[in-house]
Image 1 (tube, rainbow, N blue to C red):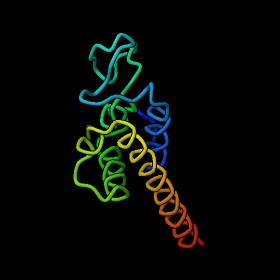
Image 2: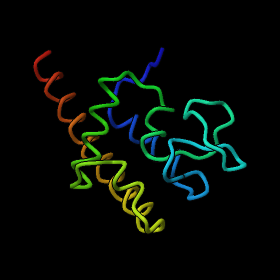
Image 3: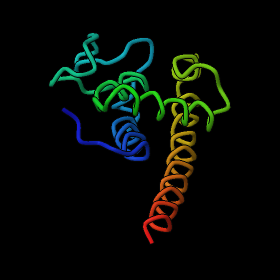
Length: 123
């Protein structure tokens, strides 16, 4: 069972998985090193689309959904798959990374504010 408790942690782990273009893919959730499709959670997977990266992080479904919504908002988009699988590979990858950076920053800010509110109420 996952011990991840923060949206920002999920987003950071997704970004780490797909930062290198060699570890990012399009048109399928994940691939083996030979290019064959596989499940994102397979031990031998070496590249993931953004949705596959979320699945491979294996956070709880509610946390994953919140992280995906945060990314969609940062991208000003309706579909992560639509962004991931756009025909221009370099553009799609860059756009996802920029979106992840924005989503991570907003999630960390939200989490810091929530922690400050909890601390204030505990006084």
